[in-house]
Amino acid sequence: MSLLHATEAPSSAPVFREISADDEEQQPAEIQSLCMSCYQDGVTRLLLTKVPFFKEIIVSSFTCDSCGCSNTEIQSAGRIQDQGVRYSLSVRSKRDVNREVVKTDYATTRIPEIDFEIPACTQKGALTTIEGILERTVVGLQQEQPLRRAEDAQVAEKIDEFITKLQRLKDGETPFTFIIDDPSGNSFIENPFAPQRDELLTVTHYRRSKEQDSLLGIESLDVQKNSEEKLEDVRDEVLQFQTNCPECNAPAETNMKLVQIPHFKEVIIMATNCDACGHRTNEVKSGGAIEPLGTRITLHVTDPSDLTRDVLKSETCSINIPELEFEMGMGALGGKFTTLEGLLKDIRDLVVDKNPFTLGDSTTSDRKEKLQEFGKKIDQILEGQMKVHFVLDDPAGNSYLQNVYAPEEDPEMNVEKYERSFEQNEDLGLNDMKTEGYEEQTLKSC
Image (cartoon, rainbow, N blue to C red; front, top):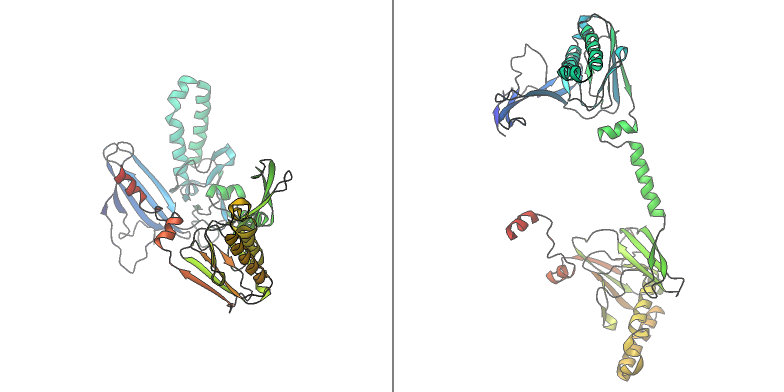
Protein backbone atom coordinates (compact mmCIF):
# COMPACT_ATOMS: atom_id res chain seq x y z
CA MET A 1 0.00 0.00 0.00
CA SER A 2 1.54 3.33 -1.01
CA LEU A 3 0.48 6.92 -0.50
CA LEU A 4 -0.41 8.54 -3.85
CA HIS A 5 -1.27 12.06 -2.77
CA ALA A 6 -1.94 14.03 0.38
CA THR A 7 -2.29 17.77 0.57
CA GLU A 8 0.03 19.09 3.24
CA ALA A 9 -1.63 21.55 5.59
CA PRO A 10 0.40 24.32 7.20
CA SER A 11 2.14 23.22 10.38
CA SER A 12 0.00 25.60 12.43
CA ALA A 13 -3.29 24.30 10.95
CA PRO A 14 -5.28 21.78 13.01
CA VAL A 15 -5.38 18.16 11.89
CA PHE A 16 -9.19 18.07 12.00
CA ARG A 17 -10.64 21.12 10.18
CA GLU A 18 -14.33 22.00 10.19
CA ILE A 19 -16.06 20.62 7.12
CA SER A 20 -16.70 23.37 4.58
CA ALA A 21 -17.08 23.57 0.80
CA ASP A 22 -15.26 26.90 0.79
CA ASP A 23 -12.08 25.54 2.38
CA GLU A 24 -9.80 24.87 -0.62
CA GLU A 25 -6.93 23.70 1.56
CA GLN A 26 -8.99 20.84 3.00
CA GLN A 27 -8.25 17.98 0.60
CA PRO A 28 -8.45 14.22 1.20
CA ALA A 29 -5.42 11.96 1.31
CA GLU A 30 -5.39 9.37 -1.50
CA ILE A 31 -4.08 5.88 -0.81
CA GLN A 32 -3.61 3.08 -3.34
CA SER A 33 -5.44 0.00 -2.04
CA LEU A 34 -6.69 -3.39 -3.23
CA CYS A 35 -10.21 -3.77 -4.60
CA MET A 36 -11.86 -6.79 -2.97
CA SER A 37 -14.18 -7.31 -5.98
CA CYS A 38 -11.71 -7.57 -8.86
CA TYR A 39 -8.40 -7.61 -6.94
CA GLN A 40 -7.07 -4.70 -8.98
CA ASP A 41 -5.67 -1.46 -7.57
CA GLY A 42 -8.20 1.13 -6.48
CA VAL A 43 -8.00 4.40 -4.56
CA THR A 44 -9.11 5.09 -0.98
CA ARG A 45 -9.60 8.73 -0.02
CA LEU A 46 -9.42 9.73 3.65
CA LEU A 47 -10.65 13.07 4.96
CA LEU A 48 -10.05 14.11 8.56
CA THR A 49 -12.70 16.67 9.37
CA LYS A 50 -14.79 18.12 12.17
CA VAL A 51 -18.58 18.45 12.15
CA PRO A 52 -19.55 21.89 13.54
CA PHE A 53 -20.89 21.74 17.12
CA PHE A 54 -20.08 18.03 17.22
CA LYS A 55 -16.69 16.26 17.04
CA GLU A 56 -13.94 14.92 14.81
CA ILE A 57 -14.64 12.17 12.28
CA ILE A 58 -12.75 10.30 9.54
CA VAL A 59 -14.54 10.05 6.18
CA SER A 60 -13.26 7.32 3.84
CA SER A 61 -14.26 6.61 0.25
CA PHE A 62 -13.06 3.81 -2.05
CA THR A 63 -13.38 3.69 -5.83
CA CYS A 64 -12.07 1.17 -8.36
CA ASP A 65 -11.71 2.26 -12.00
CA SER A 66 -11.37 -1.36 -13.17
CA CYS A 67 -14.75 -2.72 -12.02
CA GLY A 68 -16.56 0.43 -10.83
CA CYS A 69 -16.86 -0.81 -7.24
CA SER A 70 -17.22 1.99 -4.67
CA ASN A 71 -18.19 2.48 -1.04
CA THR A 72 -18.06 5.18 1.60
CA GLU A 73 -18.09 5.12 5.40
CA ILE A 74 -17.21 7.22 8.40
CA GLN A 75 -15.48 6.45 11.68
CA SER A 76 -15.42 8.44 14.86
CA ALA A 77 -11.97 9.86 15.56
CA GLY A 78 -12.72 10.00 19.28
CA ARG A 79 -13.30 7.42 21.96
CA ILE A 80 -16.55 5.76 22.97
CA GLN A 81 -18.42 8.29 25.07
CA ASP A 82 -19.28 7.79 28.74
CA GLN A 83 -23.01 7.76 27.88
CA GLY A 84 -25.17 6.77 24.96
CA VAL A 85 -27.15 9.37 23.02
CA ARG A 86 -30.63 9.43 21.47
CA TYR A 87 -31.64 12.06 18.89
CA SER A 88 -35.34 12.53 18.10
CA LEU A 89 -36.17 14.97 15.28
CA SER A 90 -39.68 16.00 14.32
CA VAL A 91 -39.42 16.35 10.54
CA ARG A 92 -41.89 18.97 9.24
CA SER A 93 -40.52 20.13 5.89
CA LYS A 94 -38.11 19.42 3.07
CA ARG A 95 -35.52 21.56 4.88
CA ASP A 96 -35.56 19.13 7.82
CA VAL A 97 -35.00 16.18 5.48
CA ASN A 98 -31.80 17.84 4.23
CA ARG A 99 -30.21 17.97 7.69
CA GLU A 100 -26.78 16.37 7.97
CA VAL A 101 -26.52 13.13 9.93
CA VAL A 102 -23.52 11.30 11.36
CA LYS A 103 -24.50 7.65 11.85
CA THR A 104 -22.00 5.17 13.33
CA ASP A 105 -22.04 1.38 12.99
CA TYR A 106 -23.65 1.01 16.44
CA ALA A 107 -26.56 3.39 15.84
CA THR A 108 -30.15 2.22 15.47
CA THR A 109 -32.38 4.29 13.16
CA ARG A 110 -36.18 4.34 13.58
CA ILE A 111 -39.26 6.02 12.12
CA PRO A 112 -42.16 5.01 14.42
CA GLU A 113 -44.94 6.24 12.11
CA ILE A 114 -44.23 3.53 9.51
CA ASP A 115 -42.64 0.90 11.82
CA PHE A 116 -39.31 1.41 10.09
CA GLU A 117 -36.02 0.42 11.78
CA ILE A 118 -32.40 -0.08 10.76
CA PRO A 119 -30.80 -2.22 13.50
CA ALA A 120 -27.31 -1.56 14.88
CA CYS A 121 -24.29 -3.08 13.12
CA THR A 122 -26.21 -3.79 9.90
CA GLN A 123 -24.78 -0.82 7.97
CA LYS A 124 -21.44 0.93 7.90
CA GLY A 125 -21.13 4.36 9.45
CA ALA A 126 -21.99 7.24 7.16
CA LEU A 127 -21.90 11.04 6.89
CA THR A 128 -25.08 11.80 5.00
CA THR A 129 -28.50 13.42 5.34
CA ILE A 130 -31.89 12.11 6.42
CA GLU A 131 -32.82 12.10 2.74
CA GLY A 132 -29.67 10.07 1.99
CA ILE A 133 -30.58 7.41 4.57
CA LEU A 134 -34.10 7.11 3.14
CA GLU A 135 -32.78 7.04 -0.43
CA ARG A 136 -30.32 4.24 0.42
CA THR A 137 -33.19 2.25 1.93
CA VAL A 138 -35.38 2.76 -1.15
CA VAL A 139 -32.58 1.67 -3.49
CA GLY A 140 -31.92 -1.41 -1.38
CA LEU A 141 -35.57 -2.48 -1.42
CA GLN A 142 -35.95 -1.89 -5.17
CA GLN A 143 -32.99 -4.09 -6.07
CA GLU A 144 -34.80 -7.36 -5.26
CA GLN A 145 -38.28 -6.32 -6.41
CA PRO A 146 -38.15 -8.07 -9.84
CA LEU A 147 -37.32 -11.37 -8.15
CA ARG A 148 -40.00 -10.86 -5.49
CA ARG A 149 -42.64 -10.17 -8.14
CA ALA A 150 -41.78 -13.46 -9.80
CA GLU A 151 -41.80 -15.48 -6.57
CA ASP A 152 -44.46 -13.77 -4.41
CA ALA A 153 -46.51 -10.99 -5.96
CA GLN A 154 -48.28 -10.13 -2.68
CA VAL A 155 -45.03 -9.51 -0.81
CA ALA A 156 -43.70 -7.42 -3.71
CA GLU A 157 -46.91 -5.34 -3.68
CA LYS A 158 -46.59 -4.62 0.05
CA ILE A 159 -42.97 -3.57 -0.41
CA ASP A 160 -44.01 -1.26 -3.26
CA GLU A 161 -46.47 0.40 -0.87
CA PHE A 162 -43.74 0.78 1.74
CA ILE A 163 -41.38 2.29 -0.87
CA THR A 164 -44.11 4.81 -1.75
CA LYS A 165 -44.36 5.83 1.92
CA LEU A 166 -40.58 6.30 2.09
CA GLN A 167 -40.66 8.43 -1.07
CA ARG A 168 -43.27 10.73 0.48
CA LEU A 169 -41.18 11.09 3.61
CA LYS A 170 -38.08 11.78 1.53
CA ASP A 171 -39.88 14.48 -0.45
CA GLY A 172 -41.07 16.14 2.75
CA GLU A 173 -44.75 15.58 1.96
CA THR A 174 -45.57 13.72 5.21
CA PRO A 175 -44.42 14.75 8.72
CA PHE A 176 -42.61 12.03 10.68
CA THR A 177 -40.26 11.44 13.61
CA PHE A 178 -36.67 10.48 12.87
CA ILE A 179 -34.81 8.77 15.75
CA ILE A 180 -31.16 7.78 16.04
CA ASP A 181 -30.16 5.80 19.13
CA ASP A 182 -26.41 5.29 19.51
CA PRO A 183 -24.98 3.62 22.66
CA SER A 184 -21.46 4.76 21.68
CA GLY A 185 -22.57 8.40 21.88
CA ASN A 186 -20.89 9.27 18.55
CA SER A 187 -23.89 9.79 16.25
CA PHE A 188 -25.27 13.25 15.47
CA ILE A 189 -28.13 15.14 13.81
CA GLU A 190 -27.46 18.69 12.63
CA ASN A 191 -28.96 21.61 14.51
CA PRO A 192 -29.18 24.49 11.96
CA PHE A 193 -29.89 26.98 14.76
CA ALA A 194 -26.78 26.09 16.82
CA PRO A 195 -25.71 27.29 19.29
CA GLN A 196 -29.38 28.13 19.91
CA ARG A 197 -31.86 25.44 20.87
CA ASP A 198 -33.78 23.57 18.16
CA GLU A 199 -37.45 23.16 19.09
CA LEU A 200 -37.84 20.19 16.76
CA LEU A 201 -34.77 18.27 18.00
CA THR A 202 -34.57 16.44 21.32
CA VAL A 203 -31.23 15.09 22.53
CA THR A 204 -31.19 12.59 25.40
CA HIS A 205 -28.10 11.10 27.08
CA TYR A 206 -28.47 7.83 28.96
CA ARG A 207 -26.48 5.15 30.76
CA ARG A 208 -25.81 2.07 28.68
CA SER A 209 -27.17 -1.34 29.60
CA LYS A 210 -24.97 -4.42 30.02
CA GLU A 211 -26.11 -5.66 26.60
CA GLN A 212 -25.08 -2.37 24.98
CA ASP A 213 -21.68 -2.47 26.71
CA SER A 214 -21.25 -5.99 25.36
CA LEU A 215 -22.17 -4.78 21.85
CA LEU A 216 -19.47 -2.12 22.05
CA GLY A 217 -16.93 -4.62 23.34
CA ILE A 218 -16.39 -2.87 26.67
CA GLU A 219 -16.88 -3.99 30.24
CA SER A 220 -19.02 -2.03 32.65
CA LEU A 221 -17.81 -1.04 36.09
CA ASP A 222 -20.36 -3.42 37.61
CA VAL A 223 -18.90 -6.34 35.66
CA GLN A 224 -15.38 -5.37 36.73
CA LYS A 225 -16.53 -5.17 40.35
CA ASN A 226 -18.23 -8.57 40.10
CA SER A 227 -15.06 -10.08 38.59
CA GLU A 228 -12.98 -8.70 41.43
CA GLU A 229 -15.49 -10.06 43.97
CA LYS A 230 -15.40 -13.50 42.33
CA LEU A 231 -11.60 -13.47 42.48
CA GLU A 232 -11.75 -12.59 46.17
CA ASP A 233 -14.23 -15.45 46.68
CA VAL A 234 -11.74 -17.87 45.06
CA ARG A 235 -8.99 -16.62 47.38
CA ASP A 236 -11.18 -17.17 50.43
CA GLU A 237 -12.62 -20.51 49.32
CA VAL A 238 -11.10 -23.97 49.74
CA LEU A 239 -11.61 -25.90 46.50
CA GLN A 240 -12.04 -29.67 46.52
CA PHE A 241 -11.63 -32.24 43.76
CA GLN A 242 -11.69 -36.03 43.65
CA THR A 243 -8.47 -38.03 43.34
CA ASN A 244 -6.96 -41.37 44.40
CA CYS A 245 -4.73 -41.94 47.41
CA PRO A 246 -1.08 -42.35 46.28
CA GLU A 247 -0.58 -44.99 49.03
CA CYS A 248 -3.61 -47.35 48.73
CA ASN A 249 -5.29 -46.00 45.57
CA ALA A 250 -8.61 -45.56 47.40
CA PRO A 251 -10.86 -42.59 46.42
CA ALA A 252 -9.85 -39.46 48.33
CA GLU A 253 -10.34 -35.70 48.27
CA THR A 254 -7.67 -33.11 47.61
CA ASN A 255 -8.17 -29.64 49.11
CA MET A 256 -6.67 -26.67 47.29
CA LYS A 257 -6.39 -23.05 48.45
CA LEU A 258 -4.90 -19.89 46.97
CA VAL A 259 -2.90 -18.03 49.64
CA GLN A 260 -1.29 -14.59 49.46
CA ILE A 261 2.01 -14.57 51.37
CA PRO A 262 2.71 -11.05 52.72
CA HIS A 263 5.62 -9.26 51.02
CA PHE A 264 5.97 -12.17 48.55
CA LYS A 265 3.47 -13.62 46.12
CA GLU A 266 0.50 -15.98 45.78
CA VAL A 267 0.97 -19.72 46.25
CA ILE A 268 -1.31 -22.73 45.82
CA ILE A 269 -1.48 -25.14 48.77
CA MET A 270 -2.80 -28.67 48.12
CA ALA A 271 -3.46 -31.31 50.79
CA THR A 272 -4.79 -34.86 50.44
CA ASN A 273 -6.27 -36.93 53.30
CA CYS A 274 -7.17 -40.59 52.83
CA ASP A 275 -9.89 -41.92 55.13
CA ALA A 276 -9.12 -45.52 54.11
CA CYS A 277 -5.47 -45.79 55.17
CA GLY A 278 -4.91 -42.47 56.95
CA HIS A 279 -2.22 -41.32 54.50
CA ARG A 280 -1.75 -37.56 54.39
CA THR A 281 0.20 -35.46 51.91
CA ASN A 282 0.59 -31.74 51.32
CA GLU A 283 2.26 -29.84 48.53
CA VAL A 284 2.85 -26.20 47.61
CA LYS A 285 2.99 -24.76 44.09
CA SER A 286 4.11 -21.25 43.22
CA GLY A 287 1.33 -19.10 41.79
CA GLY A 288 3.75 -17.15 39.58
CA ALA A 289 6.28 -17.65 36.83
CA ILE A 290 10.01 -18.32 37.09
CA GLU A 291 11.69 -15.12 38.22
CA PRO A 292 14.34 -13.41 36.04
CA LEU A 293 16.95 -13.95 38.81
CA GLY A 294 17.61 -16.73 41.28
CA THR A 295 17.26 -16.15 45.03
CA ARG A 296 19.55 -17.21 47.85
CA ILE A 297 18.21 -16.63 51.40
CA THR A 298 20.56 -17.02 54.36
CA LEU A 299 19.23 -16.87 57.94
CA HIS A 300 21.43 -16.95 61.04
CA VAL A 301 19.40 -18.95 63.58
CA THR A 302 20.29 -17.43 66.96
CA ASP A 303 17.09 -17.81 68.94
CA PRO A 304 14.35 -20.47 69.31
CA SER A 305 11.83 -17.88 68.06
CA ASP A 306 13.53 -18.02 64.64
CA LEU A 307 12.17 -21.55 64.26
CA THR A 308 8.61 -20.19 64.13
CA ARG A 309 9.24 -18.28 60.90
CA ASP A 310 7.14 -19.27 57.90
CA VAL A 311 9.01 -21.02 55.09
CA LEU A 312 7.93 -21.59 51.50
CA LYS A 313 10.19 -24.14 49.86
CA SER A 314 9.49 -24.71 46.19
CA GLU A 315 10.37 -27.90 44.31
CA THR A 316 13.38 -26.16 42.74
CA CYS A 317 14.89 -25.07 46.08
CA SER A 318 17.96 -26.65 47.69
CA ILE A 319 18.79 -26.45 51.42
CA ASN A 320 22.23 -25.97 52.96
CA ILE A 321 23.30 -25.95 56.64
CA PRO A 322 27.08 -25.23 56.60
CA GLU A 323 27.66 -26.01 60.31
CA LEU A 324 26.35 -29.54 59.76
CA GLU A 325 28.04 -29.92 56.37
CA PHE A 326 24.56 -30.79 55.10
CA GLU A 327 23.16 -30.02 51.66
CA MET A 328 19.89 -31.26 50.14
CA GLY A 329 19.29 -30.76 46.44
CA MET A 330 16.20 -29.54 44.63
CA GLY A 331 13.29 -31.96 44.40
CA ALA A 332 13.81 -33.46 47.86
CA LEU A 333 10.77 -33.02 50.16
CA GLY A 334 8.89 -31.43 47.23
CA GLY A 335 7.20 -28.09 47.68
CA LYS A 336 6.28 -27.17 51.26
CA PHE A 337 4.75 -24.28 53.13
CA THR A 338 5.56 -24.74 56.80
CA THR A 339 7.74 -23.24 59.56
CA LEU A 340 11.48 -23.51 59.92
CA GLU A 341 10.91 -25.94 62.80
CA GLY A 342 8.61 -28.08 60.66
CA LEU A 343 11.11 -28.08 57.79
CA LEU A 344 13.95 -29.22 60.09
CA LYS A 345 11.77 -32.05 61.43
CA ASP A 346 10.99 -33.12 57.86
CA ILE A 347 14.73 -33.15 57.11
CA ARG A 348 15.38 -35.32 60.17
CA ASP A 349 12.61 -37.74 59.23
CA LEU A 350 13.88 -38.00 55.65
CA VAL A 351 17.57 -38.40 56.50
CA VAL A 352 17.45 -40.31 59.80
CA ASP A 353 14.13 -41.87 60.80
CA LYS A 354 12.87 -43.01 57.38
CA ASN A 355 16.22 -43.59 55.68
CA PRO A 356 16.13 -47.17 54.26
CA PHE A 357 19.92 -47.49 54.65
CA THR A 358 19.61 -47.26 58.48
CA LEU A 359 17.24 -50.22 58.63
CA GLY A 360 17.73 -53.96 58.18
CA ASP A 361 20.82 -55.92 57.28
CA SER A 362 22.01 -53.43 54.66
CA THR A 363 23.12 -50.84 57.19
CA THR A 364 26.56 -50.56 58.79
CA SER A 365 27.40 -49.42 62.28
CA ASP A 366 29.48 -46.45 61.08
CA ARG A 367 26.76 -45.17 58.77
CA LYS A 368 24.10 -45.59 61.42
CA GLU A 369 26.19 -43.73 64.02
CA LYS A 370 26.83 -40.81 61.64
CA LEU A 371 23.14 -40.46 60.85
CA GLN A 372 22.18 -40.68 64.51
CA GLU A 373 24.79 -37.99 65.30
CA PHE A 374 23.24 -35.84 62.55
CA GLY A 375 19.80 -36.37 64.11
CA LYS A 376 21.08 -35.24 67.53
CA LYS A 377 22.45 -32.01 66.01
CA ILE A 378 19.05 -31.33 64.41
CA ASP A 379 17.48 -31.82 67.84
CA GLN A 380 19.97 -29.35 69.34
CA ILE A 381 18.95 -26.76 66.75
CA LEU A 382 15.27 -27.38 67.52
CA GLU A 383 15.95 -26.96 71.26
CA GLY A 384 17.85 -23.68 70.68
CA GLN A 385 21.18 -25.15 71.87
CA MET A 386 23.01 -24.71 68.57
CA LYS A 387 23.34 -21.64 66.33
CA VAL A 388 23.52 -22.36 62.62
CA HIS A 389 23.10 -20.71 59.23
CA PHE A 390 20.13 -21.93 57.24
CA VAL A 391 20.42 -21.36 53.47
CA LEU A 392 17.61 -21.61 50.89
CA ASP A 393 18.94 -21.49 47.33
CA ASP A 394 16.23 -21.35 44.65
CA PRO A 395 17.33 -20.64 41.05
CA ALA A 396 13.66 -20.16 40.08
CA GLY A 397 13.25 -17.41 42.72
CA ASN A 398 10.02 -18.89 44.10
CA SER A 399 11.03 -19.69 47.68
CA TYR A 400 10.45 -17.52 50.73
CA LEU A 401 11.55 -17.17 54.34
CA GLN A 402 9.56 -14.86 56.60
CA ASN A 403 11.10 -11.54 57.60
CA VAL A 404 9.69 -10.79 61.05
CA TYR A 405 10.89 -7.18 60.75
CA ALA A 406 9.12 -6.51 57.42
CA PRO A 407 8.98 -4.09 55.75
CA GLU A 408 12.29 -3.22 57.46
CA GLU A 409 15.40 -5.30 56.82
CA ASP A 410 16.14 -8.31 59.04
CA PRO A 411 19.64 -8.04 60.60
CA GLU A 412 19.97 -11.84 60.79
CA MET A 413 18.75 -12.56 57.24
CA ASN A 414 20.38 -11.87 53.89
CA VAL A 415 18.48 -12.12 50.58
CA GLU A 416 20.71 -12.29 47.50
CA LYS A 417 19.62 -12.14 43.86
CA TYR A 418 21.94 -13.75 41.32
CA GLU A 419 22.20 -14.68 37.65
CA ARG A 420 21.54 -18.35 37.00
CA SER A 421 24.28 -20.51 35.53
CA PHE A 422 23.87 -22.51 32.32
CA GLU A 423 23.47 -25.70 34.36
CA GLN A 424 20.71 -24.17 36.50
CA ASN A 425 18.86 -22.95 33.40
CA GLU A 426 19.26 -26.45 31.98
CA ASP A 427 17.71 -27.98 35.12
CA LEU A 428 14.77 -25.56 34.86
CA GLY A 429 14.32 -26.30 31.14
CA LEU A 430 14.99 -22.70 30.12
CA ASN A 431 17.87 -23.22 27.68
CA ASP A 432 15.65 -24.92 25.08
CA MET A 433 12.71 -22.56 25.65
CA LYS A 434 12.31 -20.03 22.82
CA THR A 435 9.46 -17.50 23.07
CA GLU A 436 10.52 -15.03 20.34
CA GLY A 437 11.36 -15.66 16.71
CA TYR A 438 10.48 -19.36 16.94
CA GLU A 439 8.61 -19.13 13.61
CA GLU A 440 11.88 -18.44 11.79
CA GLN A 441 13.60 -21.38 13.50
CA THR A 442 10.70 -23.68 12.55
CA LEU A 443 10.86 -22.61 8.89
CA LYS A 444 14.65 -23.16 8.78
CA SER A 445 14.31 -26.67 10.22
CA CYS A 446 11.70 -27.50 7.58
